[in-house]
Length: 207
Length: 160
Image 1 (cartoon, each protein chain N blue to C red):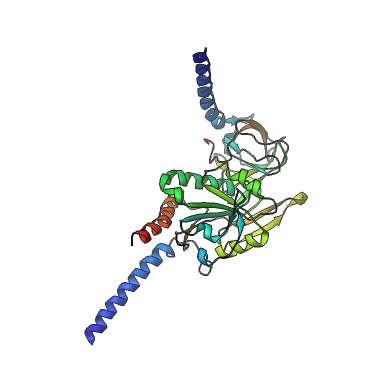
Image 2: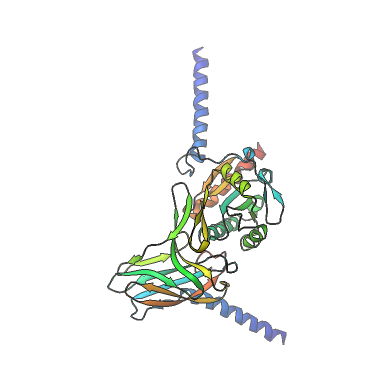
């Protein structure tokens, strides 16, 4: 009886150790999302948007391959082109392995960012980067699922800008949220994080 | 005939390759040579409806503190320095920057993700490969005109 309890205790300890390692890697020190603000899994999201070629896209477009998603807008002079340039650099660095990585730029400014605008804008970056737009309520739905926020800020002369979550979201091939790459994070952390999101798929495929 | 043409193209490309980085890293001095501007560059714009962004580094080689208080550019109906801030929730926002104080011997960089020259109401598009004049306004009355090369939309720094 004692023996059984001991084995159970060791087993439980092993499970906790495994959970701890998982937590350390995903949510532990260095993880970027505050508790309660974690993105939902893509499988729990519902949204319907349009890609730069006019095709309907939704969560199902992303599930099946690992994904890298960034919110922004094309009237953004600094953060958005910088991040898209960074993403282009990461894709180049990863090379052919990154070909199956869904890489999507989603506008938070659908009033100005039409399908045509998104098509032109993404054409200046890595060819793998997709540009999605859609109806305001659908943009709100995807941002809510990602726990991303955005806000219109009125400026002078009727001009406006958008405040928005600037981190890059990573999901594995099953649609599970893996981590984010923060805007000010050193570049050398980014590629290992992307590889980790991609690796989850490899492990699953092999097991 | 073809060979000559090819050679001309080749030497032109070399000239372009060599010329671009030189233009972007050239130091541009103020009259009293105490303010040095280095590595200016701007991103190409998509037409004229979106604000353009430009970056540069200012060094104060004089013995007095100076403040960068504003910008002027013919290409922009409203040029100003903006600061990008990212809060603890990862939400990024932009706001006009306060005066930028540079102590003697100090430097200040406008670079992606921090401060940038915000070129609103573009009067003509920023075209990759072209340049435009930008005037930096300082607290001591110094107005320093520099030449800013326009790089691609996907550029990450003065080297492209």
